[in-house]
Image (cartoon, rainbow, N blue to C red; front, side):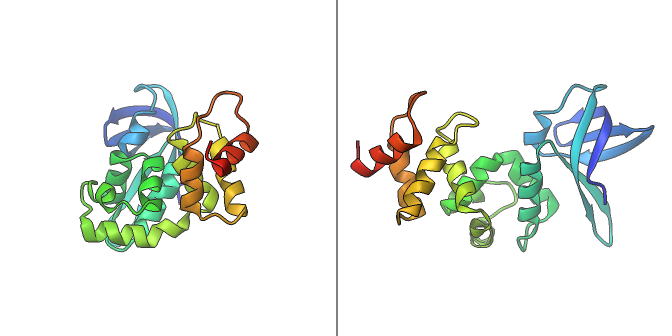
Length: 196
């Protein structure tokens, strides 16, 4: 199986790229989320690969991050979701937005993806919402309001869960707290508990 390609980005189009690896051109299908991160044509490029093989064909799907590739593989595991629909999902929503929609059981948001109707969206939610750890789910939920690399909201929510609060309640409690650069996790937890 091909895990990644490292070479020259020969061609670049919104859903398809061609990688030149030692004089051999590999066609790779990519979601828009990865396309936006690619270098210019002719530049060196490394892309993570999912090698999809069926009786009728083979295709390479490329991703700029491991998070995207993992979400793609999770989506493929859902009955009725093929690789093109999974790529469409990652083109329509970021990985974080998909996680939030799954954790919050947002059928409307998931069914807004091209190729996914209401029944398929419900199946995606049922099959995938429990695939994320509490930490991953909270990071996605808290991450919409936090700066990249800022885990204070997630850590505070995990502390509330350890105190016996339900995940959804803990997430709402910490989101209501106003953060500044010096707010500590302890202050967030105290504020969430006191409502201040």
